[in-house]
Length: 307
Image 1 (cartoon, one colour):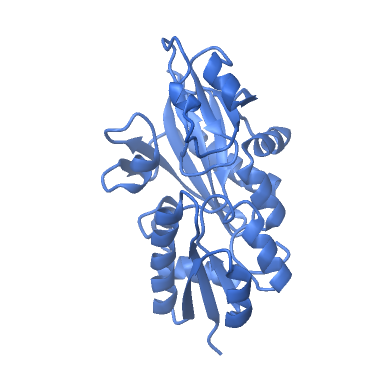
Image 2 (cartoon, rainbow, N blue to C red):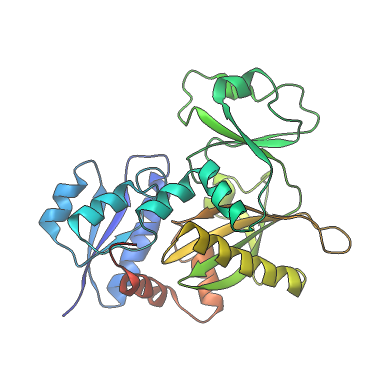
């Protein structure tokens, strides 16, 4: 019997456009793979919609708060609908930068020095010696991030805006110069390592991630084999320490010294990485011979409750 898959996409948060793009491409690929697919633009009535649909599996293509912080996962657990990606606890912890950093550090994954601050304090004066990065504690897709440069006399004044739309709790993190590297995990194995080179952007921000020509992806990353293998090992270690399931993606900075033994720092683990055919994890899977319909089919067959 053909499995009925509800592809959950959209939502009402800042990442809505990215989620709609991921969801459409995943739904198209699942239909091509032979599944019965219902596209669901998620709103606050989602539990009623799912009870009426009664799908065999929910494919979670949501991004950001509600979609990857344990909330939708809790609803799916309550309704006993098997779902893709990580479960309630792993999603909640990974989305909270402070808690995720503590878990990863305890597991031996190197992380950057950081302090938690209130937005009003971060706007008033430097909360650590520049250069440093300010980021909301529970947002994705590089929303609300500021890089405070070494010669910057004052903190970013945008932090004082009355229409600030993100968390009042910010993480101030030591800025790690160097190369941007990322590694996906699928099940219990690490995929390839990609170096991301932003084109015309100061760093891998929202536009660099999602606009055509915003960045160049180098796969496999042109780094020493020992560093490449270390990134794969750390990505898998972070995935397992946080209790992730299905696919995840860990992002790193590598401050490459002349001898190749510079700082290698894990910035975060994304439990709901982008899932368009040109996104990073599908690109890693394709490099290993797995096309997009095969990848999303694997995710559907891997789905479960109690994740």
